[in-house]
Image (tube, rainbow, N blue to C red; front, side):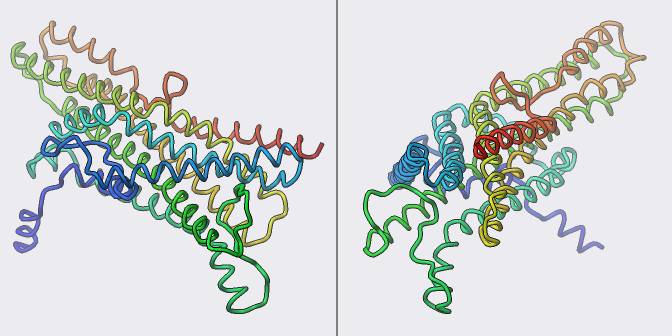
Length: 406
């Protein structure tokens, strides 16, 4: 027992970067450094910038080829089903690119928020226990790891599916002619199958697919990690208010109330700052995700082979999981921010000075308005948004099926 206690006392303290480790991993992989700590310089290294711009240029090139393919397909009336699937790829790329660009442009603002969260972060062992830090870190890490693995499997399944089929059926078993195919359908003005340009396009598309997926995963994980930290602070504040015993002395009780109100104000400002940075990418995410779910669902109803059905199913599950993860954190933020008012009411305010009671009503009134993750001013993120997204996707799906049938 003593050994266990000694081991617990000597374990390293949790740092805020532990919440960001998965997001930072994917950001580094695509050459992005979204915020800098006080000990770091604000200027990214030369090679980080080279990797970032190489990713963006390559992604734009592949996106252009896919858009041209869709335009030609609808202009000629041929390969409409393939074009609809390509539209889901275009939506996937647009979401990933928009998240990367918006976060990159707001780097300074995000750095300020991260510094303020670092100031609020509990450092001592007893403080971290009071904040229930280990429980929040476990939850955040479990969600981040699951989401990261899901998207990694998704993107590399799409990237390598055609190549694996070619190696197995064409070269090894020689039972079926698959041919050299690219992971994603796009317009190319030349025949690439029988020359070296095939391998260049294969590398480019694999590179673009991973970039888009990593940009989405990293931004979503960063948003959810920062939101989880804010949720942790709201929870601590609510418990601290509820458990604090008032003594009836105006001066002492007022000092506690002033500290609580200032703490609450900082959390509200942090929430507004997060919405300002991620608002537009969230709006684009929800709007484009509804189209992606619609296009993938349409493709699945067209009698595709079993192997392609597996790919589509993985794509659909990943898109739904991405939206649900954001809605889940948004709902947690709503619930915990609303608990401040209830916690204040549960105080033993009956023994407090009349001035304290009057001041407490202002805190309760303000806390009764929940804090939301917002996709700009148009959308508040909670679990109900998941239902709205599915309804919108089904309406698009029904419209698309009707138009295709005609």
